[in-house]
Image 1 (cartoon, rainbow, N blue to C red):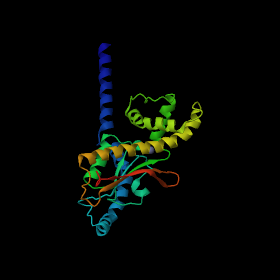
Image 2: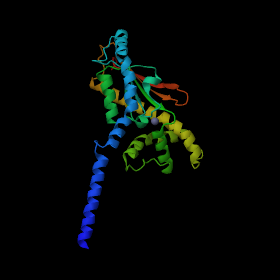
Image 3: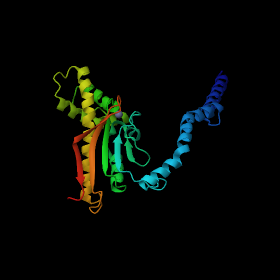
Image 4: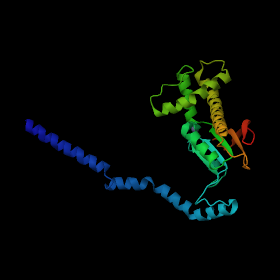
Length: 264
Ligand SMILES: [Zn+2]
């Protein structure tokens, strides 16, 4: 009896291990087909892209003098959301080499994002930084949802996951938006979120703009921003909101600032 059980167990182990091997092996025909088809449309797209690549590069070199195969000279930094509907190059009708783009859900600016902006301004001499928030932003909506579930308390959601950590970075924008809106009936959650989400999207873009201004002012103090002798000695920092419904970008010029590096 015991021996029979052992034999059955060994047979099951063998079956499981061979299943494991066939499921994971890249030499399996099924897996090979799945791997191949996963990128088929991207490869087709890249074939089309490559067909005009050298012409585009040559045209850009002729117009701007920059050979993008060996260098880049973007004038504008855009920090925006990862949302698939918000590609800055398409939205601003730009081409290769025009924009230095940082994309992260909710267009938050933490160490890595600020470091990327520092690099673009300090080393590539970009002179414009745009924070591009967008309507219907899922990341900001998640922060609003957390805020409402949290009974509108000025305390971030508990961070048990990477998504919650990201939401927590947006959370202060929601708190500010809520305070600024001065909603009359905070109990009516549906109506609150209707007005709170668009307001929080605007506040979030503004808050990130302020973080970037602080960061660039620090670089200025440290003397690593553009040199005063540089013709491009001022940097525009502004926020804008993109409308996924009609393609329009509304710039918030009221709060945009020019960091003038020549005047200390
Ligand atoms: Zn978004």
